[in-house]
Image (cartoon, rainbow, N blue to C red; front, side, top):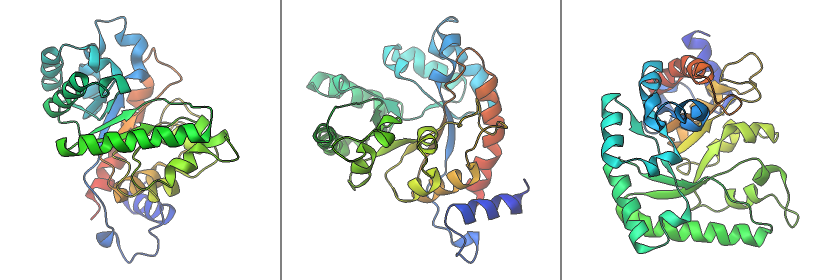
Length: 278
């Protein structure tokens, strides 16, 4: 796909076809490409810990890394490993234990300030009622208010059960979408798997998706022959709504670098091109 074809596909599919030219597109901040290290956990769990794979990721063109395992790392060692490979922490998954008690909350804020993290998210939740989801959303709203003075936002990383399993006659995902103060780490894999359009979903969430998980569906890597994601549309939509981190997550094979390497090779030029659009 050449530059003109890419721009045309991205703008038309993401809802920008009516604009006169790409110079007028209200794009947000520059996006960066990161890797969720769950994608290769079978490797780093056997080779010296989560930072042991940083050199390979940097060589692939990744700018950031993401992992719950960072909470178990020595902060000084983590900082040295990131600096040595010119990587940054791309958002941070947390549990409520990281923010409920005052001491834990202060420790989390210190971590986020040290590693320039401005978005944290709960990576899993599954109450049995819609009322339970409302309580969860209210708790995250309260956490947002508590974190705001520190320049940090909180959100939620959904899976597929929120999108395709009804509770009390409604989908929890739709309940969360309707809350204007609720932030997401959108995962485009389950969005497409559930039959929804990832780009259109993103376009309805301006300013509410600091990062997204760039998950192929159903392929093993972004751009695979069986991957049905419309990546030009997704990236253009993400840039338009202010998403900062595009975080590759390949879940099918966690014992190989092949999938995240192929994803980076496919997505890196697209991210750079969308960043260049003004």
